[in-house]
Image (cartoon, rainbow, N blue to C red; front, side):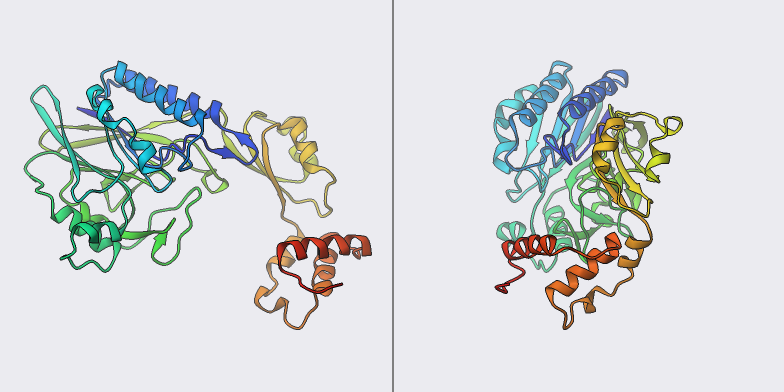
Length: 385
């Protein structure tokens, strides 16, 4: 049987000032083409289906289109919630959806949701583990020793009667690490020493009982630990840190003995996200312009600030998301020891130095007053003058 693994759709997301509705609709149609072209039996959706806990009307409409299109094709769907999703909203209508072979799990209730997928004589047990907190696991297993998120997932799995002689597949939305390294981050994730997006790390070996683990939460596509434990990654580039990602969806061919074959099917966006760097004159030279409809992050190396750079860029690249600078001024600022920069210095001195480094001239009194007003409104300046 064939399974398609997707995650982190983030339906309803924007990129800077740009609505991604058309791009996401284009993506969903492309996923349906993959389903048709590869005779997919089931789609695994590994959380962060929506970008916000209260999704927009456009976002819910896109999910409705995708799920109803899969139901018409008689394709099974196994979907879980991620940390961006609202449990209640994503779970709405789930009992009715099951009549169309759409299985949704959005909240851990003391056990893993399991459904047996059948095709001819082949069978696979599909387990669903939505985004869960250690406190939720403690609630259902108060006798268990749970000091970390890794402990919590161990308790969840140990309390299931998983028949390892069968083919077992898990869909989960967690931060999973390998033996010696964390997964490569991409997108909006932020990592501390123990977590990413406030989700603590767990070891990939917690999933040894499963023949394939369909993970969501990390936006960069990759395997973790072993090839069968995999992040599909977000199918679209949602931030500059993803600019070099090769987006794809894993297509898993699996038999009832647990033998798996994984093929990465490339995703081609309607509009790519690119990062270009150089002097504005060179970047906008007609001989260097390509794919002007793409989303653009531009880094200018001009020494002088370009007046209305965004307006100039958008005449050629209408979907320019952001412009920043990499020149001697910005590099000088990067080398400043920020921890000591404000010691025994007035607000006026700090702003004057910053202005001088950025623009090579003195700040006017009118401009300084504007900065004082902004600082007072932000609550970082309390002086009267």
